[in-house]
Image 1 (cartoon, helix red, strand yellow):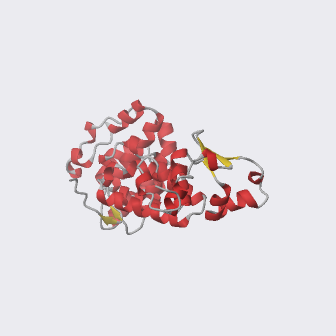
Image 2 (cartoon, one colour):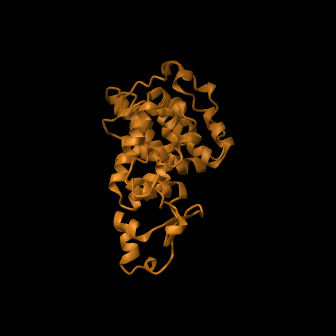
Image 3 (cartoon, one colour):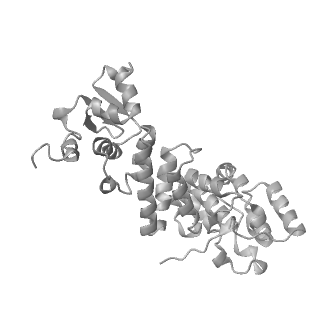
Length: 311
C-alpha cells in the first residue's frame, strides 16, 4: 500500500525499525528493540521524563528495562505507535508481563484493555487450565500488596477451583498465600474446604523443600473424599511418626497459619489427623477445638461456597 493512505499502517511500519529509530530498548531477556524517542515520549509520560527531562536516558542511545521482556515490550510498542487493538499480540505467555509493563509505563488505557482481554479469556476457556499459572506469574511480577483488576480477576478464578484438583507445582506458595489473604474472612466465592486448604498449603510447603517431603506428607493428609466419614476416622491408618523435614515445613507453614480458619475443620479431623502431625501450633488446635465444643459448627468452606463443575 502506498504510504500516506493509512496513518496506522504507516506508524506500524516504524515499530522496532532500526532505520527510523534513535533509541535502543534492551529488555529483560537481552533482546534489543528499536524505538523513536519523540513518539514514545508523546505517548507515555514515563518515556517523556526519561528522554526530555534531563535524566541520563536523555543523552544515551540505550535504555534498559530489566523487568520487562521483549515479548511484553513489543505489545507496549504496538499500542504506543498505533493505539490499536493488540489482542492478536497477547498470549497466555506474555499477558502478565504486558500488564506489568503497562503498569510500569503508566499506560492506563492499555492496562484496561489487557484486563478486559483476560476477562474474556477466563470466560471463554477453561479457566482452571490457565488461572493458577497466571496468578503465580502475576505475584512474581507484581508486589504482594498489589491490588488491581487484573490480579483480582485471577485470584477470583483460582478461588473457584478446588485446590485438591490443582497440582501444587502450578500454584506457587507465595501465590497461594496471596489467595488466602485475599479470601480470608471475606464473602467471596470459594470452592475448597478449610481442611483441604491446610492440606494444600502443607504439601505445597513440603514441595518447596523436596519431592520426598511432599510425597511423605501427602500420604498422611488424605483428601476428604478418601477419608470417608470423619466420625468414623481411624487415625491408625495414617502414620504420623516420621515426617521428612518437619521443622522446615513448620517454618514455611507459619506464614499461612493465621490465614486458615481452623474452626471450620471437623473436630475429629483436628484431633486425629492434624494435631498428631505436629505442623500446627498446639494453641491454634486447642483454640479451634474449644470453639467447636461451645458453638455451632461453621461451614466447612470460607466465604460463599462455590460448587465447581468441570465440563
